[in-house]
Length: 466
Image (cartoon, rainbow, N blue to C red; front, side, top):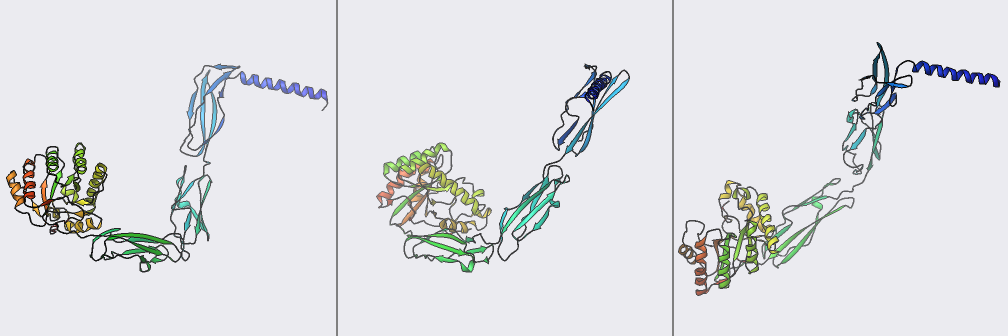
């Protein structure tokens, strides 16, 4: 083509374009705003940008009807149709929408991606799940390819998106044996008591039962007061080792003290009685023991005052609710530790001196758990607590209603050995408060010594009836 022919071709092309443009513009038509063909990821919301009606380079103010045929819950190709009426003629335009899924499914392995298997065993599948944003649960579609040192999990969704996960297998024993001690980890005994080993178990994931191979290091000599540590060692055939310790505390056996009175007060503190008791004890230079309950925090200062003035603060109960604390041994210890913690917060001392609500001989506990006192009397001692009953009762929580009766009940039952006297420190118990000084003066006049309870005090244990 020579230059003249080329110029002619250019001229004709431009002229044709103008002609086509003129033909288009001379007829009203719909112009889409945005792309005529759109691709949406499944789950992505379609956004309508609208359209205009054009004619001779200007917009016509005509109302366009839009018909959206998209089903956003299903992959596929859909149309959005636009139409408008102009001079009895319908003008149409279509936008094409492709909804696609390009996201891979997700595989989740139960357990670890690195699993240790005993050398002589096969891997036991821990399980897996597969989920796809479009196909939902694909667990049943997962293909599992088992190799020697790995397992390959593969799944493909309906859009051919493929996911893969690998679990590595190491044939070695990395777990220590499961060594468990029977009985408490701390055992309290009195001097010259006999120590009986409660026992132990050891189970290994590869070697099985190793109980017979457990080694126990250390010994207990109950003839000597002290703290003894027993160390239990269990090793499997791959050298993994488990250790546990049990502490045995041998204490001096409590003995009767000659002509000693231990004044004890249960159920306090109380705003109306405790201050008066403390006043008399201070004036008479006598130390006593208070077995306290969780009352209002407004009374905590009285527990602190009891401790600061040299008295023993022991645990009675947090709730003093028989139906709750005697429903099970677990419930009792929950209540016990709650009160121990409260006393420690107030005084800074973790007391282990306790008195059972109703005493160890109570029978009301049968109503809630048969045989529970037989268990508790052993378990509290094994767990480092010392419980104290009484051998002299004032009767101030029963049928006794006068200070004279309280006084007579106490002095008439005193012996020439240890006398643990039960009295109560509850609101309105003026009879005990009014009898207290007379009881103390009687004791002093008759050669008795007054003392507070300590861990080696004679405990005056009752016979257990449940």
